[in-house]
Figure 1: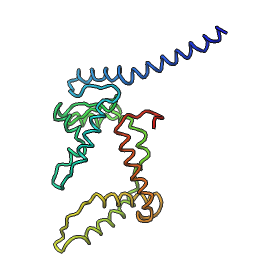
Figure 2: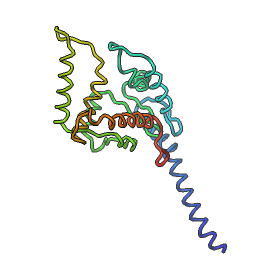
Figure 3: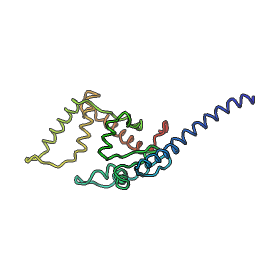
Figure 4: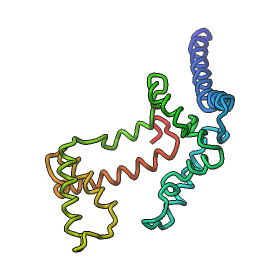
Length: 220
């Protein structure tokens, strides 16, 4: 009986220790090592915070920026990427922040950008939150052409005699994209698939909320 107990407990203990080591390495040891390497290469950036990195501050700044009204003449950058703008201002055009336990490196030097894009076999695109796959990945060119042409026709009718008008294009662009997707996926126009796209819009908002936090497989 004692032998059987040991034969069960020992392997279980090894598995638990192995899992604990992997977690410790992924959320603390490896990020700290990467931070050390980045600083040794001359890059400046935020200090790593356990598990979340800069995600909490990114989310808070996004909510604050989007809570304020914006006019057509305002700079869009502080509203879309306020944390990135702050990081570049504080640490320079080549710097890094933390997307959870993974460093996010900003490169604005033209020579370095050229080197990265020409050596894409070395600088590979990182894996993203798999929940973003719930959203549509794209549509075909002919569908976009037809939908864009219809949108431009509507705009022309809205213009005054001198050919000018002021208009909030966001809702029109949303309709155009949804219309193109609908034509490609369902063979119908946006109006016919309106309910589907209302659900997709809701799903998009939920995915946007999720990707501002840490992805843990099976958690949500």
